[in-house]
Length: 145
Image 1 (spheres, rainbow, N blue to C red):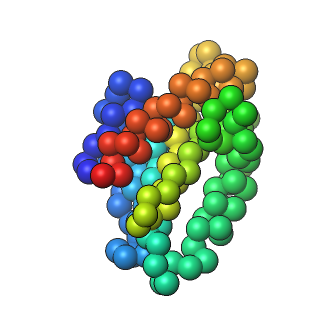
Image 2: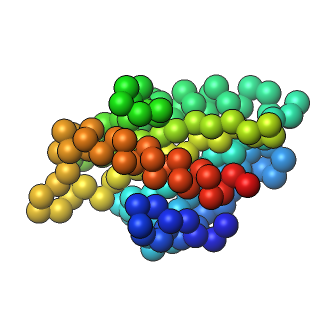
């Protein structure tokens, strides 16, 4: 899928990596450019077969550490507040995990463009958990066919 709709805006596929048959990674941004401080939706699809045994847990651990993810009690997902090395502002991540008979899906939305005159506060980001998780769920429904 070349683009997805996330909170009413089109995000374009900027990168499609991974080994077909094992794990695929898709990264979408508004511009399609994955370099720089763009907000992005990242999708990991880990196929369920003998070749992928052992891929899921390390992938989830890496994302949890990278984005400082914890359970989002108000929604069926996870939320994290993190900082990039050398940066003074907070970044935010929202994640859901879903299963189909053939694959494990991990969908993450990362806000890393938080450098405007009025940056998003942690409280505001937490207040958006249900909305962002619902948007990720919508993306999952549109791409997991």
